[in-house]
Amino acid sequence: MKLIDYGVREDEKKYIQEWSKENKIEVTIVTDLLTPETVEMAKGYDGVVAYQQLPYDEKIFDKMNEYGIHVISLRNVGVDNVPVEALKRNNIRLTNVPSYSPEAIAEYSVTGLMALLRNLKHMIRKVDDHNFKWEPDIGRELNELTVGVAGTGRIGRAAIKIYQGFGAKVIAFDKFHNPEIEKEGLYVDSLDTLLKQADVVTLHIPSLGKGNTVINRQSIAEMKDDAIVINTARGDLINTQDLYDAVAEGKLYGAVLDVYENEVGIFNSDLSDQEFSDNLLEKVVKSPRFILTPHIAFYTTKAVKNMATVSLNSMVDELKTGKSENEIDLEK
Image 1 (tube, helix red, strand yellow):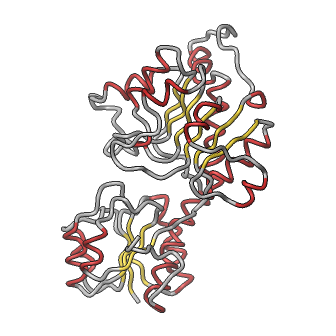
Image 2 (tube, rainbow, N blue to C red):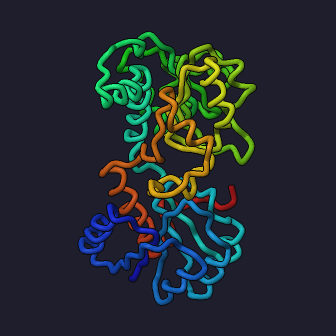
Image 3 (cartoon, helix red, strand yellow):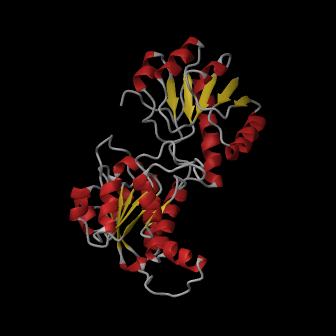
């Protein structure tokens, strides 16, 4: 069995190499993304593993079929950038890593929130300039707030435990109720209700499709004054311009953003020596009421190892048995 792994970062290499040695399976590591050109490197291999934020071109799967490769295993959760019809047309099965570390993302959400509540971004900038005055950066306490958790999958449930540990009141919404969360009586009837009642709204739901935002001018108008928004899920859940305006105008207190609707080509890139052309993102970066990071909520040693190894294990299961527990149902 021979596998090829595309789009591999430096921090992933050692985990892939360790897995290869332990399982006695050859894995060729490729740093390039999977494109109609680089897929030609997969000739002679049994399976393709990949990760990238950019869309996968349909031609990739036409060529995989031509090479007799019928499994692709993603090192991430999201499959919205994969053309399903091209997979079905070429009889190619798809797997993902549905859970590499829910705790990492849940912990990040509260880390960003605490930094915002205690005005750490502004305070650190002041101290860097040798300004050690307290005012006006007085903080707020999490234990006095109501946190609305939108989405109670693995990440949302991990977040609920953490926020409850801080003494916050937690409410939740999900179309599909988790029995344990239901038993605690945390669910509200609708997302609108959650937005109206919460001091903090943390998003842990999948993309709803381009243009279908959860946080926008209309929904913000219904939210509490001085509320806070946290997004560690998908950038297109928020209309960033509307969010920025609401913070700048004083309607909302601030936001913690680890994702951004136009992040592809920006996040995980060093643009320090280039002219920055995204004026909206520049304003977000400069505002002390925004905590912005480049899609790193997942980025821990545990999560990276799981992404590397679970994807490879799923590939082996597919090739040996024709099925893995992480195979995506392409008919849904």
